[in-house]
Image 1: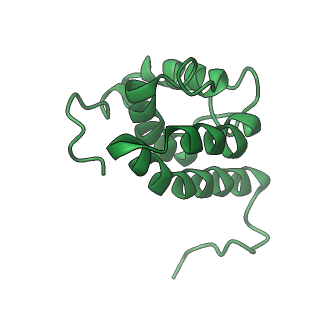
Image 2: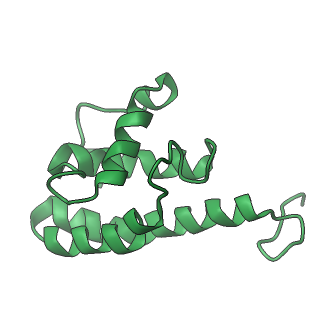
Image 3: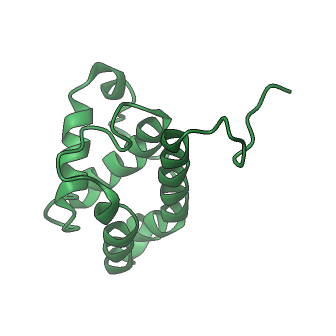
Length: 121
């Protein structure tokens, strides 16, 4: 069918890193929803630090070193949390906050930013 299996030798380390980030975001979605809809901010902050903040390089412009599907996958979720709580200050994830700020300056990401969030959860 043309698809590359995750255990295929054709998968590069970059592909593995993309998949790692996509899984990290997917694991965060239920906790993010709970936090935004009525509580769980402390749990969200801890999971963000453990699952994402600590994995991000200090000077990373993109999650895997260059723009990838991982960035496109993570941006709407992390941008929403940044708008709601502030990643750098409110959730104490300065590297993720800097990443969202950098990405939000790019026209490709700016097109995905919504003023109304009803659609997210």
